[in-house]
Image 1 (tube, rainbow, N blue to C red):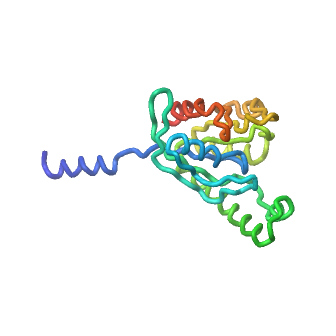
Image 2: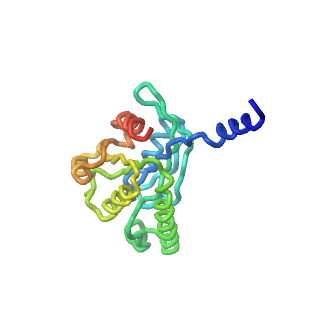
Length: 209
């Protein structure tokens, strides 16, 4: 084999390797996206993605963890996990003041950063190979932000699995989510308690590899 052929082979091996599937975790604020990201990382790396809070928009920047090896059904798949800020059609700093007792400047800063986070999250959609849409099973799924988000993902042709989260809570009704978006596979879980999480890992391996 000549030098040129060997060089071409080396370049192909270095630059032609397909990247790991990049899975974006999307959904409205406080649906449990970071809790789910933390669960995945804790189960397979012993680490966490970030902090969680009952205050909306705790996550205000996209966070990515590369090369997470997920084991399911006796096999393993390697994925990049992308945790995104909560998607919202309106972010009002006054809500942080009235509902969560923040000082005015802190509320304005959080609202500004949250708005920037939404824009960043939307930009990341095209870089994702699959979407986990996390929805709170205790909330009405027929919201404007949910419908717009699903339509946006579908228009971009992104494979999607709907995750009905918080099924450990007594008022959870995951059937409502299934009725709202029957065109996509759905998994019912509690990211906080780890309930049914193995089923989610099996679904990840099946649909995104």
